[in-house]
Image: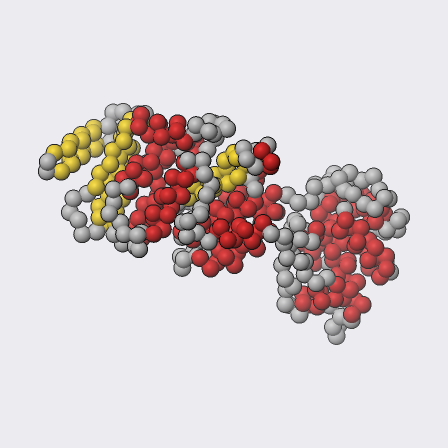
Amino acid sequence: MTTTGHSNLPATQVQTPLSSFKQMLERAMPSISAVLPRHLTPERVAKIATLAVSRSPLLLECTPTSIVQTVIISSQLGLEMGGPLGHAYPVPYWNSKLNGGNGGRECQFVIGYKGIIELARRSGEVQSIEARIVREGDVFEYEITDAGTRLRHVPKLDGELGAWRLVYSIARLTGDTLPQIELMSRAQVLAIRDRVQRNARRKDEGPWFTDEEEMARKTVVKRLAKFLPLSVEKAGDFRAAVELDNRADGGENDISGLGFEAAEVVATEAAPPPPPPTRGAAGLKAAVSKQAPPAPTSAPEAQIEPEPEAAAVGLAPAAGGPTEDEINRAECVRQITARLAVLSKGKKDAEAYKSACLSSWSDGWHKSETELGDATPALLQQILTRALES
């Protein structure tokens, strides 16, 4: 923590990757809401995205903008990202061009094979698509004749599962009697994997390392998709998602020309944040009248979530309504208390640390947090100013 020359208290990191992501997600939520289909709500999207990010340490190392971009792409396609349906995933990748060539992680949208199948079905031109793994010990017959393709697969259900050796996909188009079939050997699939990972910084992370069989299914579904006679008008999302995934396989995190809204949103997110909401009387009057002030974006106290009891201090209006002076005083107390909660979180002796902070900010005013209301308005303002600089 840094102060204005009266303390040697240790520095404390206030902005965390998760809180930074939450702030950016909140600012992008209007754009996300505008592209959501009926079966998804903004609240569910935010909950699933935050949960997915919080569960992955590597995602927290990614740039917040790239994670939000992934959320928006998933929302526009109407696919749950990181949810139980397996539609799509936020995947951290190493980008050597970030940070002036020093490299860093950024998040990419990776669609699952179930997501590709879902988009194909929504087009109305595909009745069904499935992808199957053929293992050692399975009975499998595949024959191509002038009358069509014949496939017979009897999986081995007893004992341990054998290693996978083939993967195939079957699509049935609306109105057609004969299915479309695509088959790939293990060697063909792994050759694609190796090409995709050629420039990867590490081979022991990412979906090919953690979910090889799922990626094999997606690979054969994408191969089959090239031969499906789907119209651009009805299968736009399907084609855009497959092309985006092809670009990701080629090492590009590029959404240009695919009709996604994320490009404009990300450009907005990169701009300086809007000014903070009105402080003092105007801010607290809105709270007292149950009209919440605008969501803070750049004020230091808004960079993490304060403890609930800390955020509530000083908000109770006096009988008959608060005066202007009471409003200003209560707002100062609220912000100081919230800042103390932030800085003392995780400290071994939080109360002693808070007292040290107050003493430093007030040039030796040795009072506890609960006695902030006894300070003069001028001293409260001084404490608040120094608290926000810490």
